[in-house]
Image (tube, rainbow, N blue to C red; front, side, top):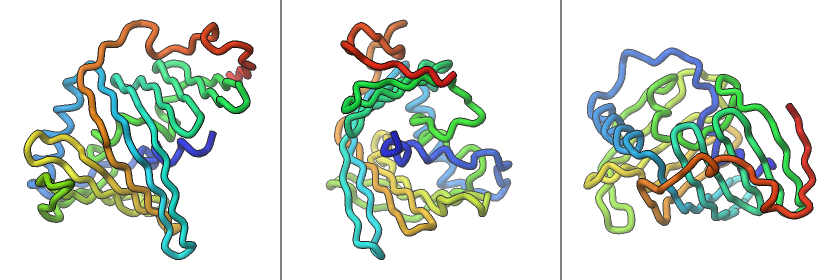
Amino acid sequence: MKKYLALLALSVSLSSAASAQQDPKAGKILDQMSAKYQAMKAFRANFTQTLENDATKVKENLSGDILVSGQKFRLKISGQEVINNGQTVWTYMKSENEVNISDFEADEQEISPSQIYTLYKKGYKYSYVQEAKENGEAVDVIELSPEDRSNPVFKVRLKVSKVDKSVKSWQMFKKNGNRYTFKINKFTPNVPVDATTFNFDKSKYKGVKVIDLR
């Protein structure tokens, strides 16, 4: 249940007020990027997450898939499936054939996959770093720094396509030396969803053990 938290921990410490001193060039790019994703009814992304720590010589790779619609999402990663319909969160662990059910608490939630596209709007300073190349494509590199110094994340670096303002990859740097890199391998916009997409259907998981934590 813990492995998926790294992907979603980008939403920690968002309660601080946004600073009035921001880089206008970075802000314009971030606004264009955010508007692109928020205009979509839903999107799917296949990604690779890499955890590195130079001091401990750790390097781990995980692959995952996520479907997002507003605050709702379905995330599959490392034998786990997390489903959030905006009211309830189901966390299914394949190896145990077990699902934990909890209430979705927006204000307390450490996790929200869609927040990578709105993270900069509250509690972070942002600045333009440079233009670079990502797999041969020109990208703008933008750095976010949390205003709350108790935040375990001290820097987030986004790479945004200069052509279509899509996020190509991002890195999250933590004070404990861990560095997480998230690379979008395949992106599908405007994926069709319906009323059942973001709910856990027990009938599709034969013999599943249900633990209701609400």
